[in-house]
Length: 182
Image (cartoon, rainbow, N blue to C red; front, side, top):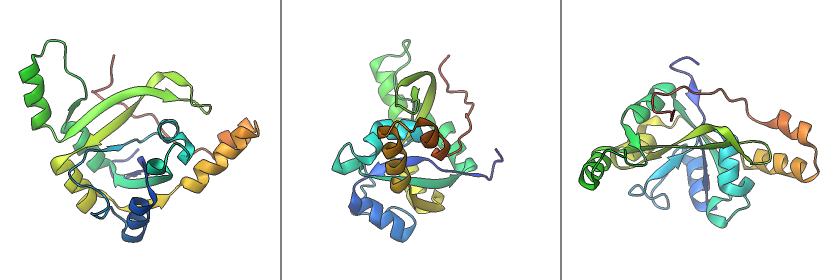
């Protein structure tokens, strides 16, 4: 993937936030809360697991693909710290590290088409403080509602049409990272 290629992280939101983001090509406050950490999930199936294909609850009923550039994704990754403390850190050291970092990096098991955990991991990136401001005001280049796609794939899964569902999945490439757990 080239450094300028857009990345489509996925996020799930209630209607009010999704409608505003689609209208304005970014998040608007209110209803989007700039003071809260927002988590971007670059892998579609992990997002479907988290949001239950858009059926989990009213707060996650709309799935949005948010395009940002690879450079901005790299900025977030480089300014992040892992979401859990290193075993060698004291509580105070961990608090200071979190306070100094506007980004959290978390690795969770990726999911397969049936949302079962896989051996490899998917990155989640939590943006707060300066990172949220950059994300909302500068980074977002495009917002696409992929809820209909999520619902269509889910409907095929309910009908046990697994191959058809698999062919509808967005094409994704693994992302290598120095933060990846060993």
